[in-house]
Image (cartoon, rainbow, N blue to C red; front, side, top):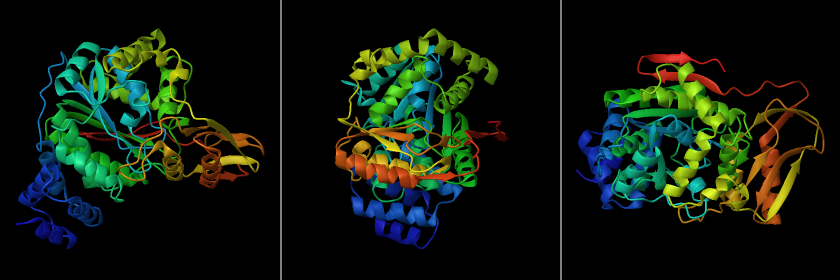
Length: 442
């Protein structure tokens, strides 16, 4: 058996055996299979799919491709993961809030993937912030502070590290087997015993339809439960950017503003609901009502913001950004995008907005691209808002006037208006657990 045989089998739509999957994963982990063959198999998987058994085998093989942590953190190690979106800064809000409530948030995050932002890229916009830490230090910070957000170490799920970067540049991001195996392999390898997933749906999500998002949520919950984890998945809306800020330093600023009590809105609402599920999965709260009360108390008292400062300090960052967001990187060009017509904002192409930020330099077009932490934009209007000609729709934070002009056209092309009132975008759709699917009241 060799990689060409595996490629041929999947190209023809055949289910791969456990042995074939193990060969693929070992080759990704140790470099014995070149990138071009890995990329070919990723595309074959994207086009032909994988059944439930294949997906489970791929997940476990990737988790076992390196070290498996058994972290001692004086509590239940809990992790949260989003399938990706635009302006999705929930981790930076809920990790310190959950830690302030006694949770132990042990999180390995990723970089931007396709048009979606990456938590690590956001954190690296904080001066001095270290996201590559030895496993022992990572666990020590979680035990002492209550939360840490770091990059995947070379020893943990190394196969995923290789495949993740290839998926970003080969148009293979939106594949349920590849999403499930990437997310859960890291969680299993990092030792998370409780896992909460945020599965996005809508125009700015990897899974644009509600049906596909619920299928993805079910697939991950089933595999997580089979592996003995306490697991739940929230299906949430991504019809427009979740937060108003899109771009790395800008999203850090918005998270700080929420923790400081200066901002609210959809990002805060979704963060609190996800945080409540984390407290329940950790055994700290037994009902959503109690969990939400705890989180709101941590928010109102400032304990969440203080916990973020502790985490930043522990990871060698400049925690003064929590008191003065002007210490974050700033773009040289601030440029307003104004409405050309009157009407109600009725539709936002979230993917197009994410790609606009990516082209500005907030994301990567190629593996070797360097992120500009300062660039991005702030959406001043949300779906359902009425605008008149000249109203500011969006404020660009650009590296140059040329970039601003180019992005202005992309932003305008991504927005649609109607003369009739438009309903607000829905935020919460469903909670998926091993017991079934519960529809949520938004």
